[in-house]
Image (tube, rainbow, N blue to C red; front, side, top):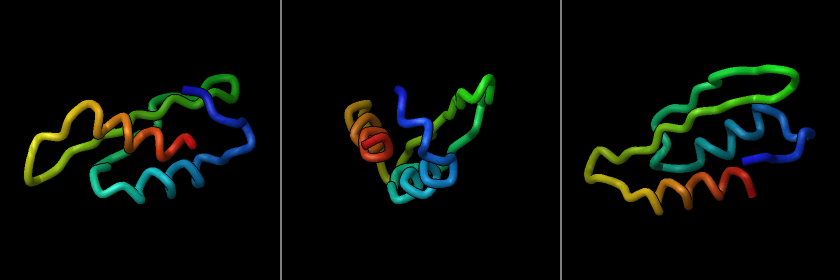
Length: 62
């Protein structure tokens, strides 16, 4: 996904960790002002669906 270049890493991180399903977020690479992030979603109580993970990611980017 692509988001505005004016949004900082810290803003993305803060929005991402509002999710109760996000366990971890890694910055994989930074190259020519392009950032690659990896999000780890899970629940200690149950398996989550791909749709649930996508919904959580959509909340970060919108």
